[in-house]
Amino acid sequence: MPAWRSLVPRWLRAGLLVAVLCGATFLIAELSDNWTIAPTAVFLGAMAGPFAFTIWLTDRTRVGRSVPPDVLFATWLVGGGVAILFTGFFESEFFHRSTGRGYLWVGVVEETGKAIAPLAICTLVPKYRSVEQALALAIVTAGGFAAFESMTFALYALDESSREARRVLLERTFVTPFGHLPWTGIAVVVAATAWHASKRIRLTPVALWGLGAAIALHSSWNFVLVNRGWWSVLIPVIAAITFLLFRRVVHGVFYDGPYAIPADHSRGDTSRRDAQPPSLR
Image (cartoon, rainbow, N blue to C red):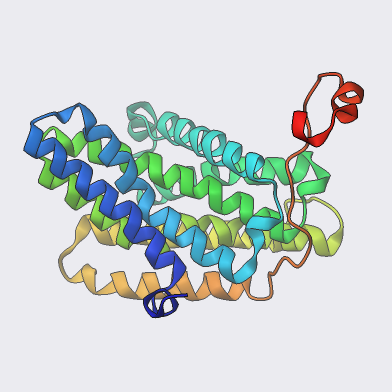
């Protein structure tokens, strides 16, 4: 292995690769004046932070091996999409008029929306109920939500200028380790740990304190970002609390089982296929 690869962490190389692709796409769009490729740049930029964080986490916990890759991809896509739909509905103007534009309301809605898919899978599919699997499902769901939300903000900013869109993507990439992904990880892992210990799925305070902590951190973060001023000094404090609490919650979570492989859903004539020599399969 080249010396530089041993010095640069894998998660950083992965994040930089996607970020460079994003920047190159924006550059080509500007040089060629072909802005039809701008959504691709936005997508790549929105994925950089969640992609790097997910690799950092799974390299340390191996949880990415606990769930088949097709299930992880489906959870990223569908779970993230469900969370966006949930938050889009409950953060609509109707609910803002009804409840006031509260930071707590936004925190409750978004953290609940992101927890729906992983907790539903853990509840309805017993073979994906371990703490390691719950963490993997939580991270990909939150990663999908974070990427889709970043795309929304960046595409909206693109109407103003490409520079503003790049600023949005860069800012959200840097806050990824202190935002949606660790918040959802805290909420889901706490619930899964409690359910695993009691061998029962119950919405008890022991199982829900992680969701409460995620809501509190999310609400505080939004309040500080919106009000700015001297409140900005609390940003690193909230970020540190988020990251340290996440590390504490996932401490000891490590998957040491075999690599989960996708199920064979083929409906063809398996007896005839198995009878063929390997070269003809």
